[in-house]
Image (tube, protein in one colour):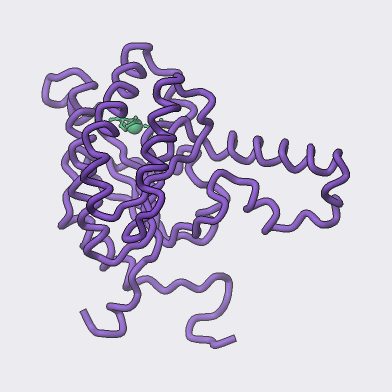
Length: 243
Ligand code: IPE
Ligand code: IPE
Ligand code: MG
């Protein structure tokens, strides 16, 4: 890669980790086996993100709408998450990885709520890589909750409606303080957003790959960063223009 391109690394990457169920079904296994294998891919991708100089990584782990799946699948996913947090926390602390969660935490069971707070506090001082896990997350739900918070502030007289700017809205989202994704990756061949980071990805670059999440590798992640580096981001302006 030429040196100029090398600097065009995304600072913030978000991944829609999709295709676990199909991966398992194609092998004659239950969907849950796909989730188990999918969870085991995360460690390698975190390491690849760290090595590549990515500063922020957001992982879509469970959507608001995923709660409509069978009770068995939802319970298995939540169980996996608990297990993952318990077993990975020491490694994450050591690797300098900070973990945060976005989404409607009140919908998590109380034990998991406690665990998510715990891992956030255990890793709060880490700076090498900021990982945000989207759990019970839906962008429409996030925007609705933000609207509610803003309306309450306005009613209380703490905020003039005319003072509501894009920044005020962004500051009331779950992602307040986090940079917007430069790059959004979706695995499994589906070409849609599925209610992920609607506001934040307004100017993100999108890369869709056919690989199902359980087969996604660090090598593929690095190749996608190269694809990103070759993109021309214009933000509504004209290519090459300085102002
Ligand atoms: C992604 O894989 C993980 C979650 C949504 C929790 P899926 O479970 O959506 O797998 P497919 O898309 O059905 O193959
Ligand atoms: C999006 O995938 C959510 C996650 C990857 C966690 P889905 O599998 O839920 O999305 P749809 O249903 O295919 O749109
Ligand atoms: Mg899916």
